[in-house]
Length: 254
Image (cartoon, helix red, strand yellow):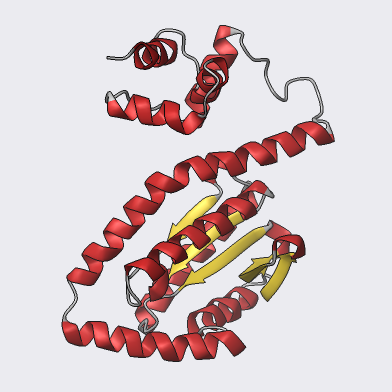
């Protein structure tokens, strides 16, 4: 084992340093530290465990106890969230693409052809008036008393248009058609789509929004739509009762 790798493992296991702290100390970047730990089968701590260790060891003061955050601190937190999502994207992207390929291979040739045909038609319709599932979700949520905005550009500087937005809950609902999680246009297109989705989610989360991503095959039965809306309503009512912690603001429904 190289000296560098041994030092990384010692600092992580024995000194309870986070990947960020080790990277700063060794003048490298956090992803390199993460890869070193994974290479040697060292279990990675989640963000809350790392923060807890830093607080207990006295390396860091409690971030909120007894004080208000300055604008600079808030910007730093926002920036660190984007970095966190950037770091996670490699692993998450690989996981999603692998799952997509597995699901695609299990389909028959006829199912794949049907999916492509429906995909082309759905893209044309969604470009002008939104998908059927988007409209269904919007209609049902409004019936339940939620104010819903469709195809809102909530962060103009980022040029991000979102599918559905519930302002009172600071919550975004993205309806992902099959091209978001199946290689119906090929592996390269899927890879680009997954990257774009992760970047979009990361940006929205860094701005303090809750992001709910709904998987749609584009041909849901009424029973399936009801199942989806029940899950979405359950999540929204939970958010209404108590706004979730940062680590729980990304939600997937299928």
